[in-house]
Image 1 (tube, rainbow, N blue to C red):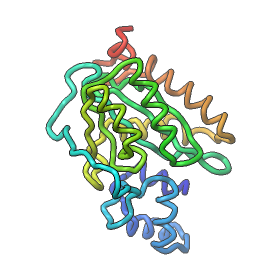
Image 2 (spheres, rainbow, N blue to C red):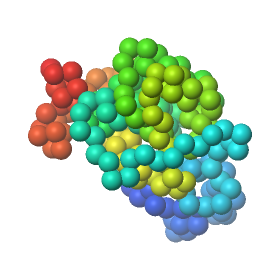
Image 3 (spheres, helix red, strand yellow):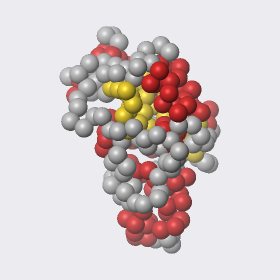
Image 4 (cartoon, helix red, strand yellow):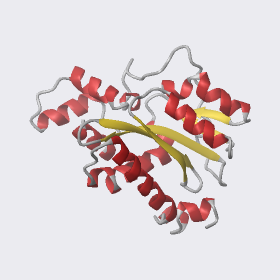
Length: 229
């Protein structure tokens, strides 16, 4: 799973077949069934353009993608969220974060030991009680298509947008954030416990928002753009 995570972060276009071939070249005797199961466990199966692998729920409404050809032009114009796998020394957790497209500011984040929807619903629900955006973009995972997640957004007058199936780049700013999290924190540490992950990620996001300069922001920090400081 560590190798799959690192290769996916390096090249998210790898599907099950290429991931299997990659592991075999490294000397691991694996078949596609096992690789697909591991990717599902990691929450990465929705990325790949393969039939019947996404953890969607047919009873949930899927909203159209609203951002093709659209650029964020002000803070709180477009927010996005996603979930990524964070490896521990023994085991793993899932991280979700909400990012403002215009400023790249991470508005909130949370960690869970399962892929149940509750941690996403609670995090975003608390966030929109304080502020709101015009468009909120997610993928088509069951955590985000459940009415428990979408209805509070719609009730606040927020338009819901969802990535096309297998189109990771529809949520490009979150994908870039995950690469930064992995290369600048996760891969440099031996994270032992869930609490250690929470503490370390808290320090990382504080540094990311308030100290990390972004070329696309004119070498300002996300906090300087979003908060004006």
